Amino acid sequence: MAHGALRTLWHDEFAGYGRADLRRDALAGVTVAAVALPLALAFGVASGATAAAGVVTAILAGVVIGGLSGAPYQISGPTGAMSAILLVLANRYGLQGVWAAGAMAGLVLIVVGALRLGRLVAFIPSPVVSGFTSGIAVIIAVGQIDNVLGVTTPKADTAAQKLLGYISHVPAPSARAVGIGLGVIALMALWPRSWQRRAPASLVAILAATAFAFFAGWDVPTIGAIPRSILLADRLRPSSIPWADLPALVVPALSIAALGAIESLLCGAVGSTMTGQRLRANQELIAQGIGNVLIPFFGGVPATAAIARTSVGIASGGRTRVVSLVHSAALLGTVLLAAPLMGRVPLAALAGVLLVTAWRMNEWETIRFMARHRLRSALLKFGVTLLATVALDLTQAILLGVALSALLFLNQIAALAIEVSPVEPERLRGAGQPASPEAEVDADRYAGVRVAYLTGPLFFAATGLFNETFADLSGVRVLILSMRGVPVIDTSGLLALDRLYARLAASGARLRLAAVQPAVRTTLERGGVLAALGADAVFWSAAEAIRASASDRED
Image (cartoon, rainbow, N blue to C red; front, side, top):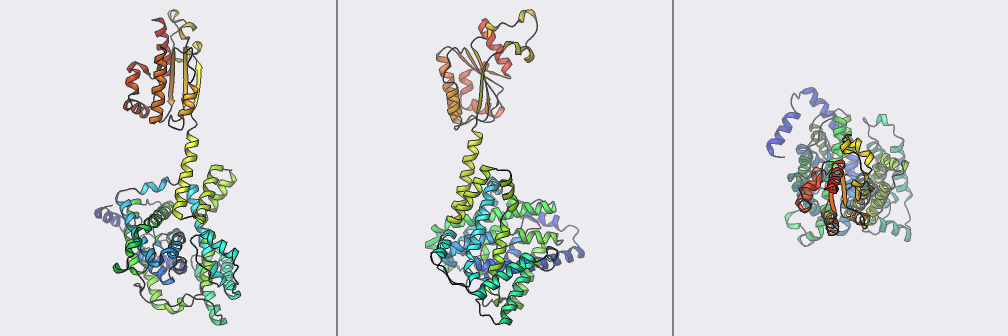
């Protein structure tokens, strides 16, 4: 979206904006910050970075991405799904690799948005997205086992390898860390929903766990020092860019960009449903791209729009992107004023929050719907994507899920139905045959005329059935293909038609087409098939083609 269009977007958003709107947005922003703070801390750690990196990400994303967003309700920051990708990346290439890949992903998002390709994300099937989300939930949960047990085990490239490591070398857990983690999980699970807006369960649980550990004198691993700054000492600098690793970081960067686009546009869909305001998808991708290019240079991790924070902002009465800006200001104030307190938060408490978050990330309603209705192909896509996400690289998981969906889709639409029948003269009266004595039906006039009714696309996957159906053409004088049910034809279909025509012509028979759809007719013209058949070989209906075939016999 051009600068002028963005300015128009802001103008429309703030038309008639007054003090009451500002007060409502400010309160919503503070509420969102209360929800975002524990998640930012947790996702920073879960990303293989630090809690401070998560908070810096939330602050900058709220200002930069929120200010440029394609909808007033979008609130961005670190997310659980993104942290799953980043943790694997951090294990392989360190934080410099995470930052470089994040900046590269931002450039990709800017290009995708500038080329107006945001709609391509819609081509990823829902079961694949659900399987990917559930797989990420498993990765997040596995990644927090160390913290909730109070142990440190060797790093692994995938969640599956990490799980195998726990099985082969069972660690000795810390009872205190386990107790804190389970306490946080229990408190979040039992916290009444009616209290959630005023006192988010995750924030209450972390404060309670921190206070308990402090006053009980429990020596458990904590977050550690939180800098009172949004410019962290550990950050991406032009001089520290890992140029040698950039080729290897291309695929991870594409993974980050793909996930960022998917999460942001899905969040926009949810927000649009809640508010009735349309998300400008390409502007949103540009905003996400700009934010993710800048954030690594402050020490933050890649960000994307967050459904939880966005929905809280909308439910709290927020109207404009001021909600996102106030949320960032509130987080910054917390960092400046309460950094020492934040540093005392036990890692086990953050792990408990993340385990609950991972459980809630699963699209349980969609999963139950697929299982209840026994949608086998959807369940297959879901299961394969989930397992691939846990066992393989996340990019490979998405590609595998999309490829499987494409194969299943091709298998479904390749079911070309062909019904071949001789002409039934008595039925022609209902198709416009004049009832005059001169036109009395004579079965001999239709001898050797066959009509084939085609339903489905005539493309490469269906040409085998097509060729098999017309393998025996003995006794055929005229073959009429009724193609009203054929929506598309490809090169393989053109070749199959051309060969069928050549075989009929060699035996002195004719091929006629009826009820050809406009798009198919255009393809037939470009492929030269219509020129070979002749202009008089295509008819509006099968009945017209049958009557013309009868006239041939009279001639």
